[in-house]
Length: 299
Image 1 (cartoon, rainbow, N blue to C red):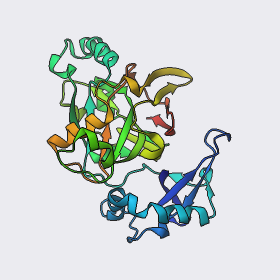
Image 2: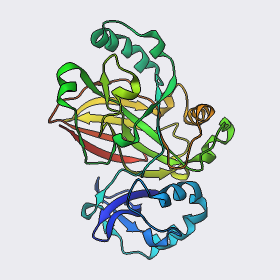
Image 3: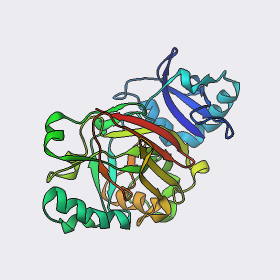
Image 4: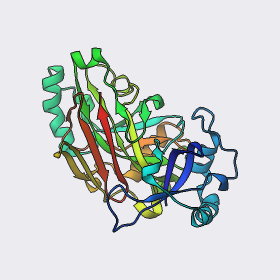
């Protein structure tokens, strides 16, 4: 199932089931508004939208009602709604570092150029936190502050993103996928400066997510998905998630050994090789196979 959050004439932050024609045009399709099938009061405010976290936690229990509502609804063309980031108020954004070998190799050159030397401790897999306030949706603008743009390179990192379902602490690898709702696409926008990772990656708009969540029954365990990032027709990043050093179940298990993962939390799985500077006026187009596509503009 593809779950979207969207604004329409019916109101903001509606819940929809996306319907796509595999033989139709790219960007086509429709969305069925299933908000009224939810057993919880709908609240569009991300700060108080507990229904969204409840949906992530209890998706298996409400899935049947959502499917029935989708089948009975009159679908809205995607072109007539505004898609939002497919998460509301996550308690945290976890991000994996150094999870593709070719990216680790390229970072030696990037750090030599931008920092004047290699920080070896940053070349090992680990996780860190990004601010939830950095989330924006598909079609949004990535806003690079003037003072940052004048002093540092700012890079794109296109990543597969995990959305946590039931969550938990000390989750075993063997059952990790039972705690995952699904996947979306994300851009981890990054300032190449000497600052802490969380600071460099947490500016407002530095975590575009979209276009929707694809649940694990359709997307699998995230281990064989093509990621493509282009700008103006130029390929910037192209990789398959089979190349992840630490695969999705192990990322979830490892992160949960450090912190409790809550329903609706988000995990970036790591930057592929091909990271590079972004500049004002350019459009970044990102696609993940079996997930979907989104575009953002840099300003």
